[in-house]
Length: 392
Image (cartoon, rainbow, N blue to C red; front, side):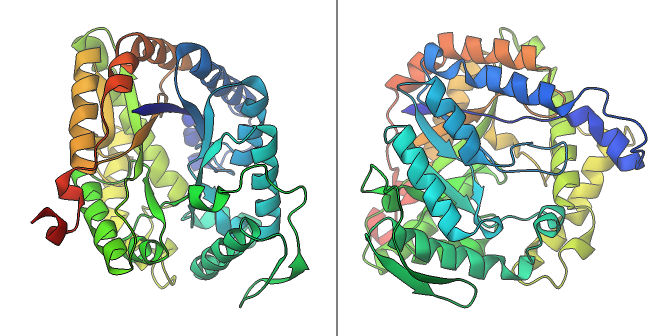
């Protein structure tokens, strides 16, 4: 099974300054240091034997600071020769579809066809949408039309498009991509059941990013494959993003509690989950309003107001956390694959306030003692991920 490294740059300790609204003083450490440290970990991917590098899209807060995943992946395309590249995800409503199509095609050329996982998503954070001047109420329509346009752009030399939002005159993508199968490399990320069903009926394969229980993700794979059976498509396997902290001893792994607490706080703050008004009445985002209680508990725990021994939603669900000694991490990955039937994984080795030197040690230990085992591991499509009729 393939294993990739996810590049995340977090200036997590700066949330205290942001929440106080004190912009009269700079961050204790500048953002660029965290970007450089995240890149240094990604630079280990090829020499340590990993299969790919993936990048997210976030901007405007201390969380996930990667404003253009394609730019990041282009940087690593030039620094590597073998490994594949993936996005987790490009937030399509923030892009003009023609600009996106051209940049995907260009990355395909400069990477010699190594942009293998074109992960797309709809986005959630009010602040990120507001900053680029896009209404969240339009996000689903923008996503759907962008997907239409990408499919046309990657399958025809000349194409045009007339939608509710985008009107594209007859044109060509130039330079044309090297690969002729870019349309089949598109994966869809979703956090709600409605979005999952919509994407599935469009034939998209799911990409899970660790924000739901692995068992729930497994049930969603069965739903996806049931829909695919209805529309005449073969069953599929998702790709999963999992959070990893590999340590020599179980006692050392206990240090992760602080990092998880701050990571879940970062998620709650970045997405605005603690304030239901960010989502109530916003078409397509109503389901997120119910996360306010969990987000409030996470923020209180991070502030020291309550004890929290295990991460609570919203945030990284424990079943997606590959944490422990090498044998424990292997056991967790095997169990997660059985539950979700993923075909490959991307590990995120740094989150919250975890120091990057600790993340680097964790990656190196994982590469020595876990990666060879996972590379030899099968990644089957398990019966639980198939439609009920197919199992009988």
